[in-house]
Amino acid sequence: MVEVLKGVYSIDHSDAGNHSMESWVLNCNEGVIIVDTAMRDTAIEKIETEIKSFGKSWKDVRLILITHKHGDHTRNIPKLVELTGAPVKAHELEAPLIEKAVGTHIDGLPDHTILPYCGEIEVIHIPGHSEGNASYYLKKHKAIIAGDTIFGDENCNLTTPPERYCLDAKMAAKEIIRLLKYDFDSLLYTHGKDIMKDAKIRIKELLEKSN
Ligand SMILES: [Zn+2]
Ligand SMILES: [Zn+2]
Image 1 (cartoon, rainbow, N blue to C red):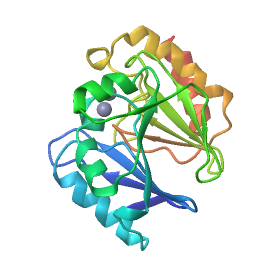
Image 2 (cartoon, rainbow, N blue to C red):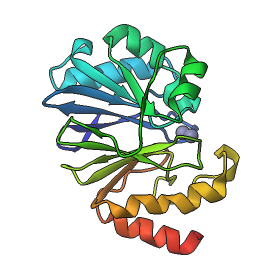
Image 3 (spheres, protein in one colour):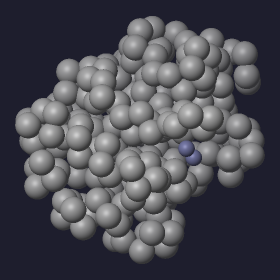
């Protein structure tokens, strides 16, 4: 249970011997947002504990936002929809793919859609890891929730998404550059330790090394 930025909570879903795994909950004035769902049954309890920690409950959840279609980010969508009644949204190229995988309706968001929560949240389409893979820019927090747009490790060493997990690894590496038009310091991503300072510089260094 870690409040990494004001009202932004990182939930650790990793377990011993397993790869690191995160999802997020945002406590906005407009309501609670869940970003990605993780995959194990235990994730539901962890998300609920997090929401209760700031005095809210399932009925306060207004939106479930998904970065991309992979099971480790989407498998709990049906359960969370049942518990919250909230709409689920993802980039418009990804929405039908997620819908097919989990059997729940997903609203499609065009690139650069601004969601009116926690100040502003902007959809950034970064294709390559999957068709409609998205990162989300939290303008007020100067932070990016990158999902699998970027990978890393427990020592904050960043990498481009590994080829074995990608639709097109070259494209995934190249299109990370789309993040650089945003003003941000923090990078929250699924597989690795979050970077809370100078994240934009770190991404520039990664791009110089990898492209
Ligand atoms: Zn993925
Ligand atoms: Zn993943």
